[in-house]
Length: 387
Image (cartoon, rainbow, N blue to C red):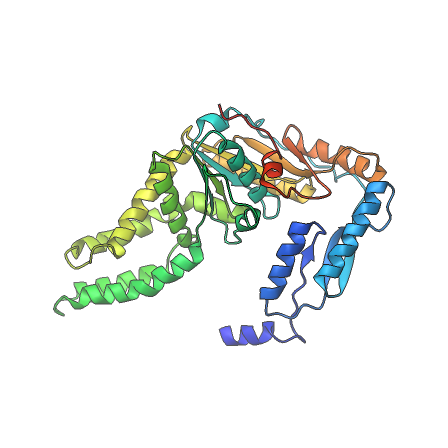
């Protein structure tokens, strides 16, 4: 099946990959990197929000930026023109106002939201602000690891440590070594009775029925270590898009039974499992699941939801807020990123009015014609107090 799928995806007559991008420099850089790594044929790319009919001086400048982006992409670009109308009628978001005081008291600050809304940028901004007076760790558990791009050209300040957890690679390694460790442990037993054979098979099958998101156990284990580290004053977490984030929140429940079943079998043969191997991994994971769940449901944690003022994004954001409430988590507030700024362009004025109606009382980050380049600029995206 894998061979047939690969043949399908690499056949330019049957499959194509079409990247969609904005003309902002960071987006162009990431799009070029993506295009270089994808092995599927790319017949063209789509430039979204293209300015085709300028109505002010700002639009003329945006047209020039669009032209530069098209040239950099290097293949045929199809324009998707920006829409100069207010957002479709949607009820405004229902959520608490973002309270800056929460950033001073909480230890764990988790940024959540749909992919592409700006979680990485907002998480980095908060981490940089807190690092002025605190010892901070910024950790990314998003497989895309866009946080690397933020600090690619400028080192973080001395009070800020930046980490990424490659959960997929760790899970792959865990699965590859797990079978060897199981075989090695059980080979030390004389082949008598059915229990050993049954348990060997049971443990191998447990690997195959791992719950969704089991790879993120490694992220949770690292988060638990950071929470327990008294030398760290604040932890800022850049998460994967909504679905992955909710799955991570559910891991204490969905993975708890799975881990405990592993440990129940291992305890029968604890004399055979070498130190620092599977047994310790599972004990650590079990403890981490419990510790993180307790922290998430305490005043030590705050969840900040990032959104954009677009109807379908707002709809998903409201579902996320509702899901957090259902899980007993109370969001600290919402940041609305990429809001159209107030200016003399008629198109922008119309769009801004509709966007503000959608996001209600959110903390606003206005769209910029050029993204923040320096870390100082990034730290100034939105303001919080840390005392």
